[in-house]
Length: 174
Image 1 (cartoon, rainbow, N blue to C red):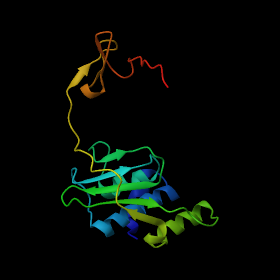
Image 2 (image 1 turned 180 degrees about the horizontal axis):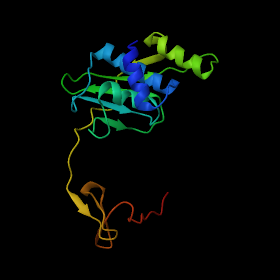
Image 3 (image 1 turned 90 degrees about the horizontal axis):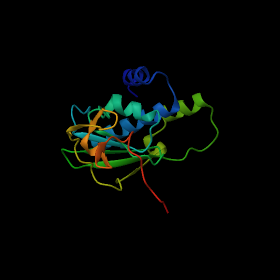
């Protein structure tokens, strides 16, 4: 384990915890399986299926971030991370295996940080394709609140361009 990199992830996240350790080890796994390095732009993409602590480790170690558009949230709630290499076409989905046995928080973190990767994770092909690269959109001003938002997030309502905050959804749902 790269202790300096772990300390960097902890500093970014704010504290040590088992969730951060899972993200940290998933990054170690993808580096081992695909040879990925820190992503300067969007050459590496991570789709995280959770918005928990592990996503912070992904940002620090892989360089995938929401701001660059190469860290994408897919809210299944599963402790899973799918990594894509745009340059080679390689991909892997890293899914945490169910844990066995009772452990306290510190014991669980220590186990995660020291266990063989194959004991922690299942490695599969992602069930979806590589997400498109991030796009820049024209900003449009909401005709109700006056705030700007990207055009793909605007709606038409009673002939006016409105943002999602001002939009009144109409659904008779089934």
